[in-house]
Image 1 (spheres, rainbow, N blue to C red):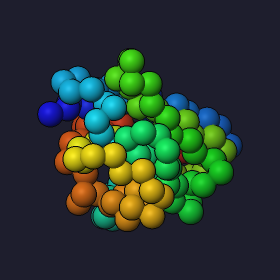
Image 2 (cartoon, rainbow, N blue to C red):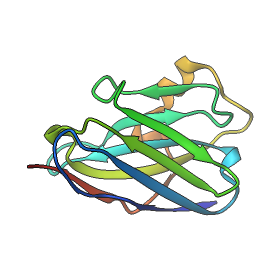
Image 3 (cartoon, helix red, strand yellow):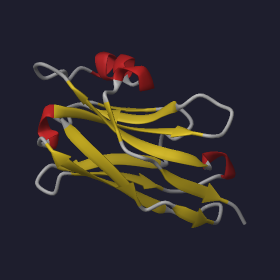
Amino acid sequence: QVQLVESGGGLVQPGGSLRLSCVASGAGLEYYAIGWFRQVPGKEREAVSCRSQSDGSTYYSESVKGRFSISRDNARKTVYLQMNSLKPEDTAVYYCAALYLVGVVDDFSTVQRLCVPKTYQFWGQGTQVTVSS
């Protein structure tokens, strides 16, 4: 199993940037697909970005494509979400998550299809991101 702890959230003005971090403990991250999700009160949790175990395929939701970037450092057991050109509608609690898959799943269509909250097994506690002037 893997335990996840997010950090890096906060208050930022529109157009600003933040980098979220998610540190894993337990098993190595190289065995897991990773993802970032977000949720606002009264709405369902939604996918932001997911990345395959080998980092060969990455999915971004349309709302963040071109502005956000997901990455990982397996040696540091850390997942990152770089968020640029932030908008007020990006305000949410952001969660990192991990999905253990038997065998490497690297094709984009599967990574995209699996990038839904009910698929991911392990979750952090979330970090608040508020975009406001």
